[in-house]
Length: 301
Image (cartoon, rainbow, N blue to C red; front, side, top):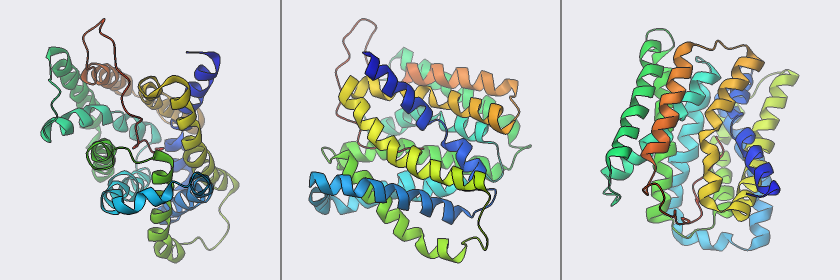
C-alpha cells in the first residue's frame, strides 16, 4: 500500500470510528428523529449532486424494492435504534457491540445458504466472536439498560444483513448514488417526527458540532473517502479498517467523554476481533485472495 493508500486508510478508521462518540454527545440535547434527519438530510445534500453529475441515478429505478429494503435494514431502523440506545449506554459499549457485525454476517450468510464452507478455523472464529459478545453483554444486562443493549444488537444484525441483501438483489448497482438515494429517502421519512420534536432553543455548541460532524464528516465525507480508498487499494484491503473502528470508538469515549474502561471491554474486544478475522477468512494461509466486487453496502456508522 502506498503513502496515499495509508493516509486514506487511517482517515477511514477515524471517520467511521467516531460516530458513536458524536451520537452520544448529540442525544444530550436533541431527539433521535432530529439527529437521524439532520445526518441524512445533510449527507444527501452533499452526495446527490455528485450522483447526478455521474448520471447514475436512473439505474436505481428498476431496483426500488430491494433498495427500499436495504435502506430500512441499514439506515432507517439501525440509525434510530443505535442513537436511542446511546441515550442509556456508553458510546464505548455501543461501538464494541457493533464490532460483532462480521461474526453475525457469517452466520446470516450460512443461514441463507451461503456456499462457503465453514472450516475449523472459521468455526473457531465464530466461537471466539460469540464468546466476546457474551463477555461484553452478559454482565451488563443487569447493570445497563437491557433494552438499549438489545437495540444495539438489532443494529448490528441490520448492518450484517444489508451487505447480503446487496450481494443477492443489488449486485452491480453503483454505491454512491445508492447511498445518496437511501439517505434522501430516510431524511424525508424522518421529516415529520423531526419537525414535531425540533428543539425549542438552539442546542449547545458541542451538540451542534457533533451533528455537523455526523452529517458532513461521518456521512458525506465518509463516502467520498471510502470510494477513494477502494480505487486506491482495492476493496479487500479497503474493508480491513472495519476491524479498527471499535478501538477508535472506545478510545474516543474514554479519552474525550471520560467513559469507564472496564477490563471486560478489553477482553471482549480481543475475542471479537480475533474471532472476526478467523470467521471471515476464506482461503488457507498462503493462498491468493481474489478481489471481491466493490462492497456496495458500506454505510458510515
